[in-house]
Image (cartoon, rainbow, N blue to C red; front, side):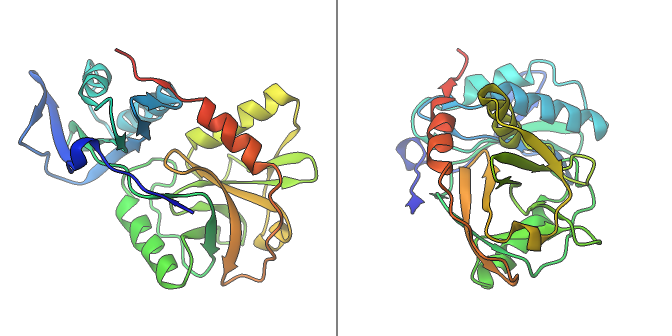
Length: 261
């Protein structure tokens, strides 16, 4: 199922550049995208926003960008409180800016393509590889899937072009070993934290695609939340049932809190 979205009043994307006068519309930073982060805002409510800011601040520091100063507060104040939005904060050409975008359509299931090569150059920092990953996802769509599975040179599953990967082995929740070149997923971290709260065992794994055969596999990110894998393209992997995802998805929905005032 696809979930439609529309920003307030159906308006489109706006870019606000941060400077001495705060956020200013009408100018956009020039240069390469060095760091980025994004999250879903629905009717003024958001999930795990502090974690997104921490990840973005770390990415900016790694890229040699400026201290964020009052940027987070300015961004939050500028976000609409009605409609469905997917803002992206960015470090471009040494400048901070926010792209206030209507949220794209969302889905509650995903088909994964295993036919592409990993294009990432900075796998632990969101931003520099977004264009290349977008092209990879487009190739996955052309192949009849929704997203592309990334696999290491030695055949270990990593993540997808747009999301983190988790799966179940019996009653154990498995996550990709963070020692592998993967992005620190905010939504995946929430899944792990909830598992701990419920007393569910969590195992860090280095698994090959064949080991996901018949498993309950989820693709998780801030835009779509938790989605079960319901098809594999380019890999001889059987789809497993997903009896847990509805209850966990409901808990993710309940995790939304109002944006700070």
